Length: 504
Image 1 (spheres, rainbow, N blue to C red):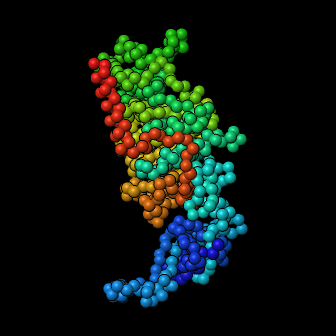
Image 2 (cartoon, rainbow, N blue to C red):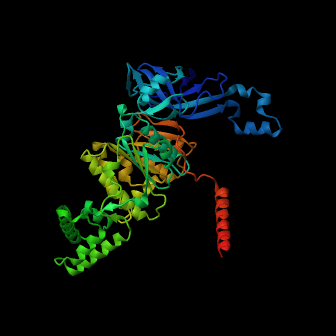
Image 3 (cartoon, rainbow, N blue to C red):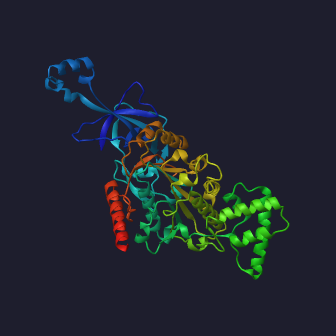
């Protein structure tokens, strides 16, 4: 459908951009910001992206004239045919030329007078790089085209979901997880591990009871025999090199006794062996015992891993680690660091299937600029970010504060799903992390409606805006509103008081 005509201006048409006057054919909104258009040029069909819209009218260009006419209580439109001189000019960025089933860089501008049309759906599918067997996320904005993204391009080089609170991050993540769970073995099914900080994904277990298992974070245990001294130093960065070597020696002694038939050992047995060891310097021994007692106080250690990560991670299945009842961030960091390292090492040895590790509130686990003590999980997550693509171990980072997220991890996420972000520091941080985000596209991020996302990076050939579909699983029951929450709390409090009085 024709929507306009290319016009000559002081800055164009050029190989990089052009303007066109929009045809007034009675339609309410013939063209929109962010729409794809097509123009025939000497090189082939040029695909362009509408970056700005300007409405103008020659009768209202002189401020003093408008003021004088309006002063008398009359409008210009009642005296002159002003409505017939209103027109809309669209500015478009040239993206590429489709010639002989190939997309090439534009090197020649369109001619003034050329007709501008809506981009053909088949052309857009090829141009954007959509896939028939890809994961379905929603519809392309302003075009009735389903957005199905290739699984490998979307996840292999990691994915970041960035938005302010309430913009739709959890809905998008749930939609993607549901799509992964609905896949068949014929088209490939990765395993999914979800670190759920607020309990927002537990509804997946109701939708897929045979595919989703929820594990309470308080039930997780770290098997001491499965750890080496280096992993202890991750939990206790203050341990010295000498203490690490002595700890490794004692761990090897205990493991040798376990293989000889003494059975597995826990933190109590490890501490007792360190206290009894006679070959260690006394001061070093006391410090090491102190560190181990500090770790034992967290209540995270046992004789075996609970759960067995290698046994639980299966193709087409999801494990939800529910941290919603756990308030101690350091405990969550330690559990994530251990589980992530265990899974990554198992994946490198081929003992678990390709997996996607979804980190909700990722800035809590891989913060930028924090000390090692406050970012225990950061080293292994950064390792997966750098090396995971070689072994099909993927990350999905979900954060409302990208400026606080580790730049090493964020820079390795080659696809970004960006919903509404209003903080200028976060917007600038996002822009610097992706070369594909231009100034015009960055300006659109702060005005995105809830549920609409910018997809940019490896998964698509060009940034696109997508209306994300609604999740099928039940949302977390925490969206009732302030009035209802306050009323419910007071009602419970009154019932407790009445019960106490009745008891007395």
